[in-house]
Image (cartoon, rainbow, N blue to C red):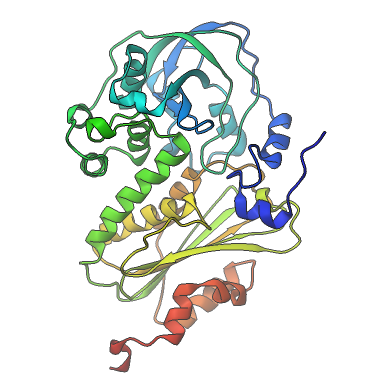
Length: 415
C-alpha cells in the first residue's frame, strides 16, 4: 500500500523534515530510482576516509554513528573530493552523486551521551572527525551494504550503508594542533571552541564534524549531534559571531547586487547602505524538487533586523543560516555593514536536494564576483526584476526588509 500523500503545499513547506510522518514519500520515491555506481559484494574492506563521519537523527537520543570510507585506497586529492563541499561548486549532479556513492557508512548504534566517556570505538571515530587529511581505515561489516542512495534537504547525498562489526585505523590521523588543544579542553564551551577554531582557519564543515562527533564543549555537556543539525548549529554560531563584529563597522555607500547560479538555484544578493539586517526569500517554482506537484510558486521567508532573532528560522530552515554565514563573511572582508536581501529562485532543473552546503557555496561564489552598483534602491530593484523569473511584485509582498524601508522612516531619512 502506498503512503497517503500530503498536500503539495505541505510538501514544499516541509521539504523532508518529516512533518507528516516517519518517512518522506517524495524522498522514498526518488531513492528507489537511484542506485549507486557499483554493488559491494564483500563484508570487509580497507580504504581512505576523506576524513568523514555521519551521525543519524532517527531514534534520537539513540542514534547511529558511522565512519565513512570508500572501499579502496585513494590519494589525498581523490579522498578529499568525496566529502569537501568547498570543492563542489560547479560540479554536475552526476559528479556529486558519483563522489557520494563511493562512501560506505559503517553504522554503530550509540546513545548521544556516550561522548561524555567515549569507548575505544567511539574515540577512533572521533579521531577521524578531528583529522584534516585522509585516514586509511579497515572495516568489517555484519552484512553487505544496501545499494541505494539517500537524499535530504540538509545533507549531501548518502551512499551504501551496513551495520559495523569492527573498525580500525591503519595510521595516526593528522590532527591540527588547535583542534587537538580545544578537544582536550574540557572546560571550554562548544561555541567558544568553534569560534577559536574558525579564527584559526578550520572550515565550517570541519567544525560541523567536530560538533557532530561530540568532541567539543564542557566534559559533562558533550554529546553526539546528528549531522543534519550540526552543520546548521555551526553556521549559526559562527554567523552570530561575525554579525557581532559587523555591527561596529560603517555601512557601505552604495547599493550592490551580487549573483550566482548553480544546479538551477539562482541567488541574487542585494546589499543596501543601511545598518545590519538580513532578509531571505526562497521561491520554489513549479516542477522543482519539493514543488513537483505545485501549480504556483511557493515562497518561504525569514528575516532579522539589527538586534538579530531569538527563534529558529522555521520557514527557510537550514538555508537561512548557510546564506547568512556567506554574506557575513563578505561583510567582514569588506569591514562594512549593510542590510542584506537575498532572492533565491529554485527552478525545475533542481531535481534532487543536495544539502545546505549548496547554499553556502553558491552564495560564497556570488560574493567573489564584481557586484553591480546602483545609486538607489529603485534602480537596483528594476535591474534585478529583469534577471528574475518571478515578478518583483511577489518578492516585494514577502520582503519584511522592503516593507520596513518603504513604510518606516529613520531619523536620518529626514536630513
